[in-house]
Image 1 (tube, rainbow, N blue to C red):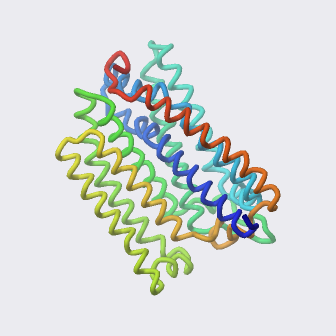
Image 2 (cartoon, rainbow, N blue to C red):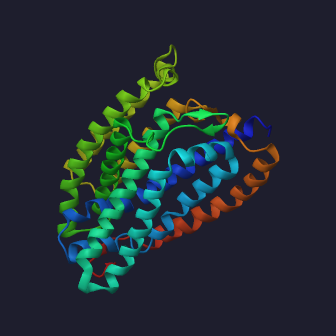
Image 3 (cartoon, rainbow, N blue to C red):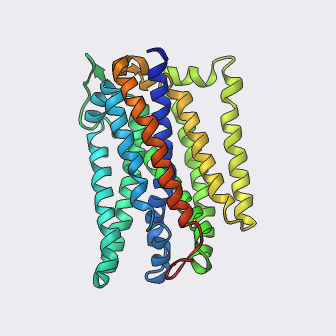
Length: 334
Protein backbone atom coordinates (compact mmCIF):
# COMPACT_ATOMS: atom_id res chain seq x y z
CA UNK A 1 0.00 0.00 0.00
CA UNK A 2 1.44 3.39 -0.98
CA UNK A 3 1.46 6.61 0.99
CA UNK A 4 -1.03 8.00 -1.51
CA UNK A 5 -3.50 5.23 -0.74
CA UNK A 6 -3.24 5.31 3.05
CA UNK A 7 -4.85 8.73 3.68
CA UNK A 8 -7.79 7.75 1.48
CA UNK A 9 -8.08 4.43 3.32
CA UNK A 10 -8.15 6.26 6.63
CA UNK A 11 -10.74 8.70 5.32
CA UNK A 12 -13.03 5.79 4.51
CA UNK A 13 -12.35 4.22 7.91
CA UNK A 14 -13.38 7.44 9.64
CA UNK A 15 -16.46 7.71 7.41
CA UNK A 16 -17.45 4.19 8.47
CA UNK A 17 -16.86 5.02 12.15
CA UNK A 18 -19.00 8.17 11.88
CA UNK A 19 -21.76 6.23 10.15
CA UNK A 20 -21.62 3.53 12.83
CA UNK A 21 -22.00 6.22 15.49
CA UNK A 22 -24.91 7.86 13.69
CA UNK A 23 -26.64 4.50 13.25
CA UNK A 24 -26.10 3.18 16.76
CA UNK A 25 -26.36 6.34 18.85
CA UNK A 26 -28.82 8.10 16.54
CA UNK A 27 -31.87 6.06 17.54
CA UNK A 28 -30.69 6.21 21.16
CA UNK A 29 -30.66 10.02 21.06
CA UNK A 30 -33.89 9.89 19.08
CA UNK A 31 -35.68 8.16 21.94
CA UNK A 32 -34.55 10.98 24.23
CA UNK A 33 -35.80 13.55 21.71
CA UNK A 34 -39.20 11.81 21.64
CA UNK A 35 -39.28 11.35 25.42
CA UNK A 36 -41.44 14.44 26.15
CA UNK A 37 -44.15 13.09 23.82
CA UNK A 38 -44.46 9.84 25.79
CA UNK A 39 -46.67 9.45 28.84
CA UNK A 40 -44.82 9.51 32.17
CA UNK A 41 -44.43 6.18 33.90
CA UNK A 42 -44.69 2.87 32.11
CA UNK A 43 -44.55 4.23 28.55
CA UNK A 44 -41.29 6.08 29.18
CA UNK A 45 -39.92 3.11 31.11
CA UNK A 46 -40.66 0.82 28.17
CA UNK A 47 -38.97 3.18 25.71
CA UNK A 48 -35.90 3.49 27.90
CA UNK A 49 -35.74 -0.26 28.52
CA UNK A 50 -35.46 -0.80 24.77
CA UNK A 51 -31.98 0.77 24.80
CA UNK A 52 -30.92 0.21 28.42
CA UNK A 53 -28.68 -2.83 27.70
CA UNK A 54 -26.86 -1.21 24.76
CA UNK A 55 -26.92 2.58 24.97
CA UNK A 56 -23.55 3.21 26.61
CA UNK A 57 -21.66 0.99 24.16
CA UNK A 58 -22.91 3.01 21.20
CA UNK A 59 -20.67 5.96 22.03
CA UNK A 60 -17.57 3.80 21.57
CA UNK A 61 -17.69 4.92 17.95
CA UNK A 62 -17.66 8.59 18.91
CA UNK A 63 -14.47 8.08 20.91
CA UNK A 64 -12.93 6.07 18.07
CA UNK A 65 -13.85 8.75 15.55
CA UNK A 66 -12.34 11.58 17.59
CA UNK A 67 -9.20 9.61 18.34
CA UNK A 68 -8.89 8.48 14.75
CA UNK A 69 -9.16 12.04 13.44
CA UNK A 70 -6.44 13.20 15.85
CA UNK A 71 -4.11 10.33 14.98
CA UNK A 72 -4.67 10.05 11.23
CA UNK A 73 -5.29 13.71 10.33
CA UNK A 74 -3.67 15.84 13.05
CA UNK A 75 -3.69 19.00 10.96
CA UNK A 76 -7.44 18.70 10.43
CA UNK A 77 -7.97 18.02 14.12
CA UNK A 78 -5.91 21.09 15.07
CA UNK A 79 -8.05 23.29 12.83
CA UNK A 80 -11.48 21.78 13.46
CA UNK A 81 -11.34 21.74 17.27
CA UNK A 82 -10.74 25.48 17.79
CA UNK A 83 -13.33 26.29 15.11
CA UNK A 84 -15.98 24.11 16.72
CA UNK A 85 -15.14 24.33 20.43
CA UNK A 86 -18.58 25.62 21.40
CA UNK A 87 -20.78 22.96 19.71
CA UNK A 88 -18.34 20.14 20.55
CA UNK A 89 -18.18 21.07 24.24
CA UNK A 90 -21.97 21.48 24.29
CA UNK A 91 -22.34 18.01 22.77
CA UNK A 92 -19.97 16.36 25.25
CA UNK A 93 -21.56 18.02 28.28
CA UNK A 94 -25.03 17.09 27.02
CA UNK A 95 -23.97 13.45 26.54
CA UNK A 96 -22.54 13.34 30.07
CA UNK A 97 -25.62 14.97 31.59
CA UNK A 98 -27.87 12.67 29.58
CA UNK A 99 -25.97 9.62 30.82
CA UNK A 100 -26.32 10.74 34.43
CA UNK A 101 -30.04 11.26 33.94
CA UNK A 102 -30.39 7.83 32.30
CA UNK A 103 -28.90 6.05 35.30
CA UNK A 104 -30.30 8.26 38.05
CA UNK A 105 -33.97 8.25 37.05
CA UNK A 106 -34.19 4.58 38.07
CA UNK A 107 -32.55 5.17 41.45
CA UNK A 108 -34.31 8.40 42.37
CA UNK A 109 -38.01 7.79 41.64
CA UNK A 110 -38.99 10.79 43.73
CA UNK A 111 -37.44 13.12 41.17
CA UNK A 112 -38.04 11.04 38.07
CA UNK A 113 -39.79 13.84 36.20
CA UNK A 114 -36.77 16.07 36.69
CA UNK A 115 -34.41 13.40 35.38
CA UNK A 116 -36.74 12.77 32.44
CA UNK A 117 -36.43 16.44 31.49
CA UNK A 118 -32.64 16.18 31.82
CA UNK A 119 -32.58 13.05 29.66
CA UNK A 120 -34.66 14.68 26.93
CA UNK A 121 -32.77 17.97 27.13
CA UNK A 122 -29.38 16.27 26.94
CA UNK A 123 -30.49 14.25 23.93
CA UNK A 124 -31.81 17.28 22.07
CA UNK A 125 -28.75 19.43 22.81
CA UNK A 126 -26.31 16.66 21.84
CA UNK A 127 -28.09 16.00 18.53
CA UNK A 128 -28.44 19.71 17.77
CA UNK A 129 -24.76 20.36 18.54
CA UNK A 130 -23.69 17.54 16.22
CA UNK A 131 -25.78 18.99 13.41
CA UNK A 132 -24.47 22.51 14.00
CA UNK A 133 -20.88 21.20 13.90
CA UNK A 134 -21.59 19.47 10.59
CA UNK A 135 -23.10 22.62 9.12
CA UNK A 136 -20.19 24.74 10.31
CA UNK A 137 -17.76 22.33 8.65
CA UNK A 138 -19.66 22.43 5.37
CA UNK A 139 -19.91 26.22 5.24
CA UNK A 140 -16.13 26.46 5.56
CA UNK A 141 -13.51 27.18 8.21
CA UNK A 142 -11.16 30.15 7.99
CA UNK A 143 -7.56 28.90 7.91
CA UNK A 144 -4.27 30.78 7.72
CA UNK A 145 -0.81 29.21 7.98
CA UNK A 146 -2.35 25.80 8.72
CA UNK A 147 -4.19 27.13 11.79
CA UNK A 148 -7.71 28.31 12.56
CA UNK A 149 -8.01 32.05 11.92
CA UNK A 150 -11.71 32.64 12.42
CA UNK A 151 -13.75 34.03 15.28
CA UNK A 152 -15.52 32.48 18.25
CA UNK A 153 -18.97 32.66 16.61
CA UNK A 154 -18.07 31.66 13.05
CA UNK A 155 -19.76 28.30 13.56
CA UNK A 156 -23.13 29.99 14.10
CA UNK A 157 -25.06 30.69 10.90
CA UNK A 158 -28.52 30.09 9.41
CA UNK A 159 -27.15 27.07 7.57
CA UNK A 160 -25.58 25.50 10.69
CA UNK A 161 -28.82 26.07 12.61
CA UNK A 162 -30.69 24.36 9.77
CA UNK A 163 -28.40 21.33 9.89
CA UNK A 164 -28.71 21.26 13.68
CA UNK A 165 -32.51 21.16 13.56
CA UNK A 166 -32.41 18.67 10.68
CA UNK A 167 -30.27 16.21 12.62
CA UNK A 168 -32.55 16.45 15.66
CA UNK A 169 -35.52 15.59 13.46
CA UNK A 170 -33.61 12.83 11.67
CA UNK A 171 -32.62 11.24 14.98
CA UNK A 172 -36.25 11.47 16.09
CA UNK A 173 -37.16 9.43 12.99
CA UNK A 174 -34.57 6.80 13.91
CA UNK A 175 -35.84 6.73 17.50
CA UNK A 176 -39.47 6.36 16.44
CA UNK A 177 -38.76 3.54 13.98
CA UNK A 178 -36.61 1.81 16.62
CA UNK A 179 -39.55 1.92 19.05
CA UNK A 180 -41.82 0.51 16.35
CA UNK A 181 -39.44 -2.42 15.98
CA UNK A 182 -38.75 -3.02 19.68
CA UNK A 183 -41.97 -2.19 21.55
CA UNK A 184 -45.63 -3.09 21.45
CA UNK A 185 -49.01 -1.77 22.52
CA UNK A 186 -49.49 1.91 23.32
CA UNK A 187 -45.83 2.84 22.87
CA UNK A 188 -45.66 1.22 19.45
CA UNK A 189 -48.82 2.98 18.28
CA UNK A 190 -47.44 6.28 19.50
CA UNK A 191 -44.18 5.56 17.67
CA UNK A 192 -46.03 4.93 14.39
CA UNK A 193 -47.69 8.36 14.52
CA UNK A 194 -44.46 10.13 15.49
CA UNK A 195 -42.46 8.27 12.83
CA UNK A 196 -44.84 9.47 10.10
CA UNK A 197 -44.52 13.11 11.23
CA UNK A 198 -40.75 12.80 11.67
CA UNK A 199 -40.41 11.26 8.19
CA UNK A 200 -42.23 14.22 6.59
CA UNK A 201 -40.12 16.73 8.56
CA UNK A 202 -36.90 14.85 7.76
CA UNK A 203 -37.71 14.86 4.05
CA UNK A 204 -38.34 18.61 4.12
CA UNK A 205 -35.16 19.34 6.10
CA UNK A 206 -33.06 17.07 3.91
CA UNK A 207 -34.39 18.84 0.84
CA UNK A 208 -33.53 22.26 2.28
CA UNK A 209 -30.02 21.23 3.30
CA UNK A 210 -29.40 19.52 -0.04
CA UNK A 211 -30.62 22.56 -1.95
CA UNK A 212 -28.40 24.93 0.03
CA UNK A 213 -25.19 22.88 0.18
CA UNK A 214 -24.04 23.17 -3.49
CA UNK A 215 -24.11 26.95 -3.20
CA UNK A 216 -21.89 27.14 -0.12
CA UNK A 217 -18.71 26.50 -2.13
CA UNK A 218 -17.99 26.48 -5.85
CA UNK A 219 -16.35 23.09 -5.39
CA UNK A 220 -19.58 21.63 -4.03
CA UNK A 221 -21.48 22.88 -7.07
CA UNK A 222 -18.89 21.38 -9.42
CA UNK A 223 -18.94 18.06 -7.58
CA UNK A 224 -22.69 17.76 -8.04
CA UNK A 225 -23.49 19.41 -11.37
CA UNK A 226 -20.39 19.21 -13.58
CA UNK A 227 -20.81 17.06 -16.68
CA UNK A 228 -20.67 14.05 -16.78
CA UNK A 229 -20.63 13.70 -12.96
CA UNK A 230 -24.24 14.77 -12.77
CA UNK A 231 -25.19 11.47 -14.41
CA UNK A 232 -23.95 9.70 -11.27
CA UNK A 233 -24.73 12.28 -8.58
CA UNK A 234 -28.35 12.56 -9.72
CA UNK A 235 -28.85 9.01 -8.50
CA UNK A 236 -28.52 10.20 -4.88
CA UNK A 237 -31.75 12.26 -4.78
CA UNK A 238 -33.45 9.49 -6.75
CA UNK A 239 -32.44 6.94 -4.09
CA UNK A 240 -33.63 9.29 -1.34
CA UNK A 241 -37.01 9.64 -3.06
CA UNK A 242 -37.34 5.85 -3.39
CA UNK A 243 -36.38 5.28 0.25
CA UNK A 244 -38.87 7.83 1.56
CA UNK A 245 -41.64 6.47 -0.65
CA UNK A 246 -40.96 2.97 0.68
CA UNK A 247 -40.77 4.34 4.24
CA UNK A 248 -44.20 5.96 4.03
CA UNK A 249 -45.69 2.79 2.56
CA UNK A 250 -44.10 0.63 5.27
CA UNK A 251 -45.48 2.89 8.01
CA UNK A 252 -48.94 2.90 6.48
CA UNK A 253 -48.91 -0.89 6.23
CA UNK A 254 -47.72 -1.19 9.84
CA UNK A 255 -44.48 -3.04 9.13
CA UNK A 256 -42.27 -3.28 12.19
CA UNK A 257 -38.67 -3.84 11.05
CA UNK A 258 -38.66 -2.31 7.57
CA UNK A 259 -39.22 1.33 8.66
CA UNK A 260 -36.08 1.26 10.79
CA UNK A 261 -34.00 -0.27 7.99
CA UNK A 262 -35.29 2.28 5.49
CA UNK A 263 -34.49 5.11 7.91
CA UNK A 264 -30.95 3.80 8.17
CA UNK A 265 -30.86 3.73 4.38
CA UNK A 266 -31.80 7.41 4.28
CA UNK A 267 -28.88 8.24 6.57
CA UNK A 268 -26.51 6.04 4.55
CA UNK A 269 -27.41 7.71 1.24
CA UNK A 270 -27.22 11.13 2.91
CA UNK A 271 -23.67 10.35 4.01
CA UNK A 272 -22.83 9.37 0.44
CA UNK A 273 -24.16 12.75 -0.64
CA UNK A 274 -22.02 14.43 1.99
CA UNK A 275 -19.00 12.56 0.68
CA UNK A 276 -19.75 13.69 -2.87
CA UNK A 277 -19.79 17.31 -1.69
CA UNK A 278 -16.51 17.36 0.24
CA UNK A 279 -14.25 14.62 -1.16
CA UNK A 280 -11.24 14.80 -1.41
CA UNK A 281 -11.19 17.55 1.26
CA UNK A 282 -11.23 16.71 4.94
CA UNK A 283 -11.52 20.37 5.99
CA UNK A 284 -13.68 21.76 3.19
CA UNK A 285 -11.93 24.51 1.27
CA UNK A 286 -8.77 24.26 3.39
CA UNK A 287 -7.09 20.83 3.41
CA UNK A 288 -7.40 17.71 1.31
CA UNK A 289 -7.11 14.27 2.83
CA UNK A 290 -3.49 13.99 1.77
CA UNK A 291 -2.46 17.45 2.94
CA UNK A 292 -3.80 16.83 6.46
CA UNK A 293 -2.63 13.23 6.86
CA UNK A 294 -0.15 11.97 9.43
CA UNK A 295 3.19 10.48 8.27
CA UNK A 296 3.07 7.25 6.31
CA UNK A 297 4.63 5.18 9.13
CA UNK A 298 2.04 6.44 11.62
CA UNK A 299 -0.84 5.58 9.30
CA UNK A 300 0.53 2.06 8.79
CA UNK A 301 1.04 1.52 12.52
CA UNK A 302 -2.49 2.70 13.37
CA UNK A 303 -4.03 0.73 10.54
CA UNK A 304 -2.76 -2.49 12.11
CA UNK A 305 -4.48 -1.56 15.36
CA UNK A 306 -7.73 -0.64 13.64
CA UNK A 307 -7.79 -3.90 11.68
CA UNK A 308 -7.66 -5.73 15.02
CA UNK A 309 -9.84 -3.39 17.09
CA UNK A 310 -12.79 -2.66 14.82
CA UNK A 311 -13.78 -6.34 14.26
CA UNK A 312 -13.69 -6.83 18.04
CA UNK A 313 -15.98 -3.84 18.56
CA UNK A 314 -18.31 -5.06 15.82
CA UNK A 315 -18.34 -8.54 17.35
CA UNK A 316 -19.31 -7.52 20.87
CA UNK A 317 -21.76 -4.93 19.56
CA UNK A 318 -23.42 -7.50 17.32
CA UNK A 319 -23.52 -10.01 20.18
CA UNK A 320 -25.21 -7.48 22.48
CA UNK A 321 -27.84 -6.67 19.89
CA UNK A 322 -28.40 -10.37 19.23
CA UNK A 323 -28.91 -11.14 22.92
CA UNK A 324 -31.46 -8.33 23.23
CA UNK A 325 -33.11 -8.92 19.87
CA UNK A 326 -36.71 -9.39 21.02
CA UNK A 327 -39.50 -7.07 22.01
CA UNK A 328 -39.37 -5.09 25.22
CA UNK A 329 -42.36 -5.00 27.58
CA UNK A 330 -43.06 -3.13 30.76
CA UNK A 331 -40.58 -5.23 32.74
CA UNK A 332 -37.85 -5.52 30.13
CA UNK A 333 -37.00 -7.80 27.20
CA UNK A 334 -38.91 -11.00 26.56
